[in-house]
Amino acid sequence: MSRTSVLVLKGGPDAEREVSLRSGGRVAQALRDDGTFDVIELAIDAPTADELAQLQGDVVFPVLHGPWGEGGPLQELLEAAGRPFVGCGSAAARIAMDKAATKTIAARAGVPTPRARVLRRGDELDLEPPVVIKPSNDGSSVDLFVCKDRAEIDSALATAFSRRELMLAEEFITGREITVGWLNGRALPIVEIVPADGLYDYEAKYVRKDTRYVLDPELPAGVAERAQAATVEVCRALGCRHISRVDFMVDDRGPWMLEVNTMPGMTDTSLVPKAAAHAGLPFPALCRTLVECALGDRARGDRGDRARERARTS
Image (cartoon, rainbow, N blue to C red; front, side):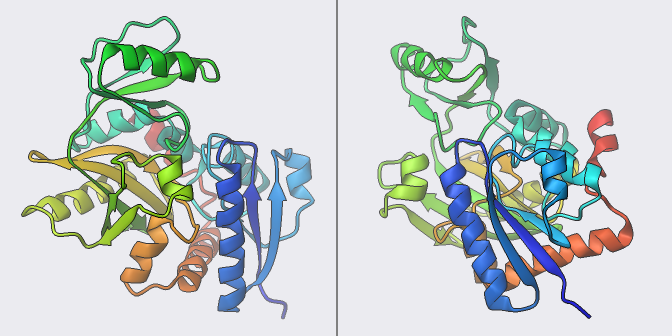
């Protein structure tokens, strides 16, 4: 009997393509090291449904970051083709990529999130600085600005709107940045992010070597439990599947949810792999577990779009 084959997709057309290439390459190597499955590794742009249909692989592991590869379009193609795949279904992926919609769902679930406004060119901002300006429907590694006054807000928006149509302005929470991975229904250990210059942007994530990551950080009483419970609740409300990561800022009032990533980075500096390893699940075992989740969904007849009804009624 032939072994199950896993098609690892990486690259994509989105801004974080280079990160995806690194993440996907690392996932493919981890699955080879694990030895359970045959592995096919492929860099893609934005293939059509017909082009995807020509690709081999019993299970698809799409390690892509950004609106097309992570935010629903690729997932919708895979669902339509009946291909089992790792990660959220298309409905949950689309909602999570929309930061404003995610914040609304979090607030309905009782999870605190900073005040925010979606902005188009020419809109007036009624939030007082300091504020964070970031893409409304993309990852936050690119075009992320912390603005301390109106002049910085105007400059940030002029730069952002030169290449984007929508931005999110969010109340700036002064405090500590933490992230909580979510794996198949449970929260992973907390990771605190300590950038050398205070801003966790693309450079701090993927280029600079002076960002510190603290596993199971010492936090005020009850904060860790609240952040992990909020992670489980938000992922449930969104209809997430298999793996996600929820980011928070913590001040003296507690944790404030910022956003949800439905295909977290898998590079050697990425946070979910660090948290999983700390919980006793080394990276090859984490990748195997995710493939097994997709296989289990196929056996149960779950095509990945179970969040559609929830999204319609939220």
